[in-house]
Image 1 (spheres, rainbow, N blue to C red):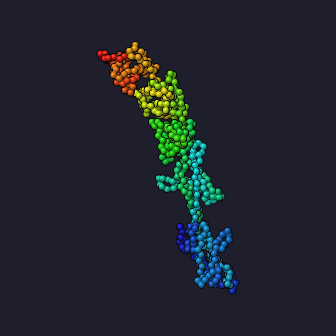
Image 2 (cartoon, helix red, strand yellow):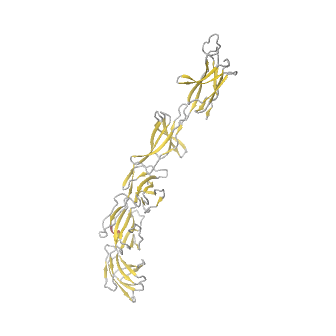
Length: 505
């Protein structure tokens, strides 16, 4: 770009020195086609010396370092004119034409022409992320520009779609032009060198604060001193895990695997806990949503499960989380043929702090109950154990302070084996209230008569449920195999095969 002056400058000057009587004064002129231009552009300097003799030499000079330095020379022709095309350096420059004494004519020079050569400073930058103490990422900006100039910060205002001066001095370049600074604000910004004299304003490229994932430490708190959510209100986190590890993280997050794919939550129905299983060894990225959105310090826990042995006989004790948001897994040794009873709240989304419970087989797969009783405020699930081994009741807390009581929530139903035609036998529960089981074998096509003091429910080998009531009830047998009579209180029970049901049963 060229900045044109309003008028072409034409300067002439007569020789000021006292010439010898034999030497006539010579006038020399110099003008520029424009006096304001950008660095790198050319300017035409031209003039005439009508009284100078043909063949005389004129020299274009530039003022530099307190003296005039030769730039170019021309030999006058019949027109007594000269023309120079130059690319002046940046800044304010002075040029003149000088004719040395020759051919009996005295030395002469033109008046200086002043050129304003404007220039735009270059601001080159490189950005990198630096993790400060307190797990705060800072964006380090290093670069080079004009030596010893001040660099100021500007931020992008999306409301006006314009750059706005922040008013803060970002850095001062050293004698070699190098500078360095750090920023943490989550916004777009750039650095600028302000105009001065012939120097125009210079700008860096648009910069953004880098926010790599904050690394979490397993089974420990990661404290973030200054929370910096992005435009979507998200803070990126990361955690490194080995394949198969179950991890719970306080807060709500989307989880992405080492390959960038979305990882399905292990138990998504939680209030402020995110759980997932590492499918492969590597680093997992979380898009954490701080609620409420704040810049205050926070602590984030990433934990692996606490594993305990479950004492069925004790039926006591609260097994609390050791760490906020931690999953607790109670291991229960069960034998083939056992009946496991699990009680839990039927209001999984309530705010009573009760966590989610899942019953897992020895391979770690969730088991579906063989029978479910829905009560007023609890749900009782029955699991017939097919394979001996270690079974797991997994508690995933809904919040960092969930009640983790294991009390009577999980139990092995006490079992009494009934003999066809034998005297009545007491079937007793071990908790109040509780569930006990009376087990008997029957053949399809038989009719059995159940005598008992209370009501109960019979589960066929396939899980078909039939309600039975005391004192006596006939039950047609449709499946061959072991049947389970479930009772909720102590019962005196007998069973026998009958040809026909007694009247009223």
